[in-house]
Length: 104
Image (cartoon, rainbow, N blue to C red; front, side, top):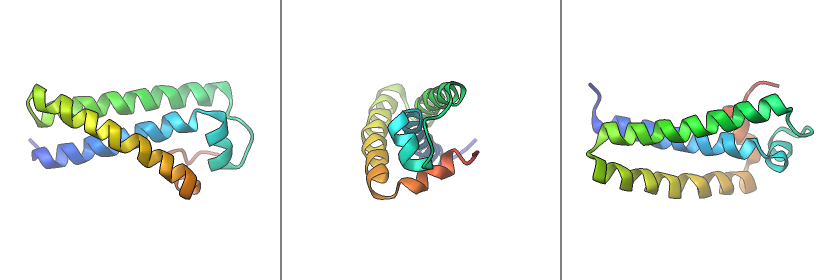
């Protein structure tokens, strides 16, 4: 259907966005990115669910792109790269994370 490299790029993007949503579910990061008080409980729950789904989708896409033994390794590498990337983005340009949660 799709080339494996396209599926892996989608898996990496899904992992990065998933971690961004999980970061925005935390009060400190929400205030840093949005400049407002803590998100409501509903928004926090939505962000946690979306973050979990993003990481799960990343794993599924890795399994679609490659055999299981390699897919697990690639997914763990995506996790290891995406989490610090979101952390560095939060310390460098937190406003850029507004793209993953544009609603006000």
